[in-house]
Length: 215
Image 1 (spheres, rainbow, N blue to C red):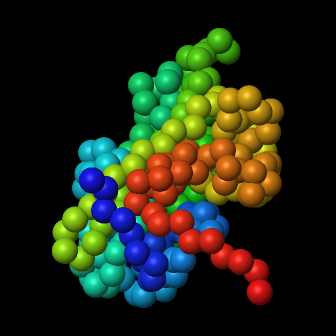
Image 2: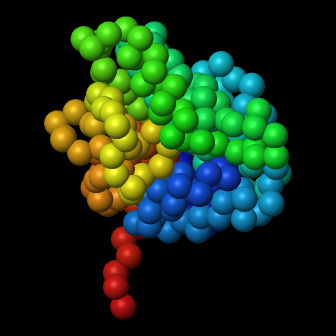
Image 3: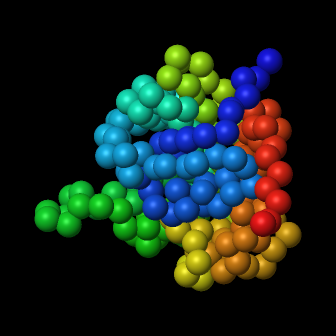
């Protein structure tokens, strides 16, 4: 039986501001007090896993142990059919620009360009289908953990469009839509994204619904 998460503080095991913002919004209907690993000054563990599940569990356990609180970690990425599932678990790594001396960090436009460049090498008729995958790991300080996975199917477009998202959002058009993730209102994206799919499974399995009545 899935362990239920009780109302109270929950560590969001991430230092990614965009990801934290999305998860905070998804937590609003519940009696949860989200606090990010960044807010607590927790170190970022090295992501040595070879799957989204392994990395999500690694991050969740690290934050739960360090904070002495339940922790929720997200490991997500883009899988492109024509690239044999790449970048996959290395989605964020493709944005690293550490080789530019004195200017470390992530350049997502560069990352999107890498994907587009590899697709362009395969010609104009290349399969542009792709999917975002999100794996959520919920861990407790005693070592117990639950894992939930969500998916969002779509296709890639070029050039990037929109300024509302983050990461690869400006080049991803979800199935049934004509707008990229970065052009869709955040509230609508929360309802259809891979993270929303995983979160719905998390809620169904591990959350106790708290009805908040406006005062």
